[in-house]
Structure formats: C-alpha cells, structure tokens
Image (cartoon, rainbow, N blue to C red; front, side, top):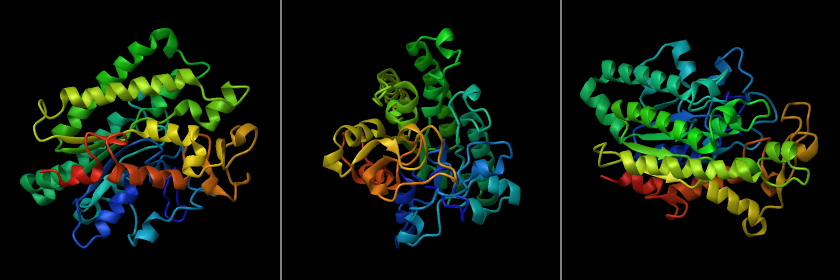
Length: 350
C-alpha cells in the first residue's frame, strides 16, 4: 500500500518494485536503473502533484502494511517524475530510474482524465532520457538504459471504462474492435519506448478486473465475478503477449521481454483460496457498504485486522500479501507465471 509519510501514492504493490529494491541492496546491483510506466498499481506519488486528481492514496489507511523498503534495507522506489520536474533534475536524482506511472492512467488519452496518460508518460520519459544524454553523453546514456529494467503496468482502466454505465465505447466498438484499437495504440507507444533505449521490458498484464470488489458489488446480486469483464481482460492479455511476440526481437534488435500472468495467478488465489491461505476473496479489506466496496478506503472507514486473509485491499487493488506473492512469482517463477522468461532471467540475459 502507499506510504503516507513518503507520499507513496496509490498502492506500492508493483510486481517488480520490491524485487528491484532487493537488487539495488545487493553488493553488486543487478540492473543500473528501473523506469516504471503505468497506472495506480505502480504510481508512487505522481498524482500527489496533480492538483485536481482524485486518484490519490496519500492518506490513511493506505500504507498500513507497506514495509518493502524497510524490510529490504533500501530507502524506496525510483522517485515520481513530477517530484523531480518540480525540484529540477540532476544526474543523481534520475540515475537509478524514475517512476512515470499515474493512478487512473490508460493506454488511450481519453481514458486518462485527471491522470497522466501513457502517451504523456512516454513524453516525460523522453525528457529524462534527454537529461541523461546531456549529462552522461549519448553513448553512456544509451548503455545505461539498455541494461535497465522497464516495467509497464497498463490497461485496466481502459478495460473498466468500456463497461462503465454511461460509457459510449460499446456503441463505438465491439469488444474485439476495442482490443484492436488498444493494441495498435500500445504498439506505437512500445515502439517509442524502444526508440528511447528500452531493451529489457516487463509487461505487467491486467488482472481479473471482473472479480474486484467494486465490480462484484455494483454488478452482481450474488457477489459473483463479472465474466464479460474478465473475458475482455483475458483477450487483451493474449493480444499484448502476441504484440511482443510479433514486434519483438526479430523486428526490434536487442529487445528482451517478460510477460506476467497476473490474471492467471490472481484467478488462482480467488478460485482456490484455501490452497493459498486466503479466507475472503470477495470483500475489500478497507471500505464500507456491500462487500466493503460502495465507499472507498478513506480515513473515516475501518479496515480489517486480518489483512493476510484478504485478496483485495480496496475497491480494485490487491493486499500487500498478494503483491508480495506476485512479486515472488514474477521474479523467479515458472513459465505459467511469467514468460518466456522470468525477471531474474531477463536481467541476466545477454
């Protein structure tokens, strides 16, 4: 979850951030830097600098279990871009990476109202890359970025917006047409990141959005998962994996990548809770109303004391224990958890 004291906005539950901290804390760092793009799952404070943004978590009870940096002996994750742009950039502030992610962000600009869209995040990354090149020289900057890890966690907001009650998207596109639009846009975005030196990429994947407490509470009288939403997530994930297979190493020399099976793992936790030690897969730990999902996790509501029993922390986001399980699976997991290689193998690949 997000640490209020450190302004860790919107759930530091990234599938890679904790592992990255472990890498940096090692005697010999495994990667020189981490650059993060995405939505609320990996936003560590950019939205705190957007005055009118509603997608923030820099308040209680977020952060109640966050211990990644302290437990691993590292000060924190890469800094949010907007904190740097406000203070002015110097080489020490960007040398180990930057987080560009923004809660509420989408692949499409129109799905990013009040947030920093993926397109804008890439523009911000170009600014950082330009600063690296100016201060290190073009060759050293390119070398640093090529050996760094690029994490992209995006797509959930685009899919959820398709199913909003007043959304016009279903009238404009069939589900397949919408996925095609997202993938064509993402392909161009991915090309831009590659052109700016990215060579080791981790794609986070979209989880079981139809099983989130918010969607269960709003759209199912029995609290069941919303199959049509999960089906779109499955199809989107398959399309993004195909994107990398099709545009990947043959067409983009030097590219190496790993695709996380976030959907499959979270689905396993939900449908086989006892096997993974969970007791509640429907309710949010923090919130109020039906499934604790009608009122979000704000300071006036209560949060559960037995948080390791829960899959979901709030309306949409997983608990700290789930985030750690995902981290472990993606960093050292098998091909059914992350493919074609895991993060450790990605880092070691030559």
